[in-house]
Amino acid sequence: MAGKNAAAEPRGSIFIPRSEFQDIGARTDQTEHVTINGKTTIIQRGVHVDVPVSVFEVLKVKYPDL
Image 1: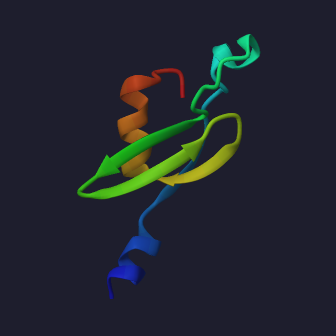
Image 2 (image 1 turned 90 degrees about the horizontal axis):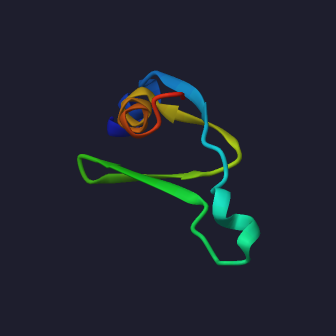
């Protein structure tokens, strides 16, 4: 049953730009991690992705221009 409820959660599309330090040659993490109630969502930077609204709300605090 939990799988059905998770699939029914509203989703939205977001885009987080790639890190500005990628061109320097230093290895940077191009992912963003959000953990809510023990469940971690990993978002790839530089790609449009669909995420649950709860994840969007957490990221909106860090990235107000989403």
